[in-house]
Length: 138
Image (cartoon, rainbow, N blue to C red; front, side, top):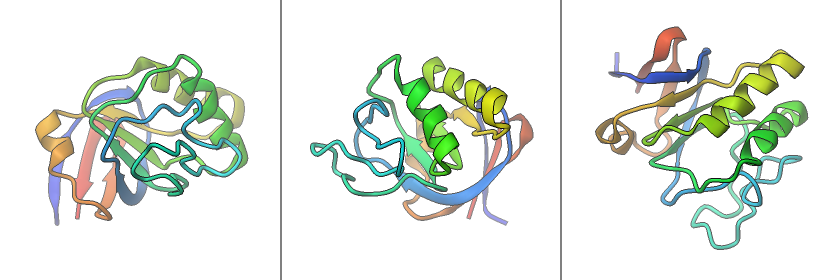
């Protein structure tokens, strides 16, 4: 059945995808191409990797208030992450998820999980996010 954890909901929704566990914080603004979903920050260890359809797992983000618009634009372009799981809460990404839902009718769940749970998610694990913040990892 897999491991189950409970997160604090920043933006609710349902999603399934393969975990993309980032080794370092990432700012979506200047770090992700909103037209393709590729990580374009050349200093990031996962440079060139696509976030499209993946469950993005990060201990923290490298903040920018413009990350909300980049998240919404990835939704518009069809290359958004399926969900975002964070070890530190980021309300900017939650705003982006809310805007994307309002404008495009697509929900990108954003959850805050305890760091111990974030660190326990293996790269490329199958992750299911359920309404109310429950996460299943297999």
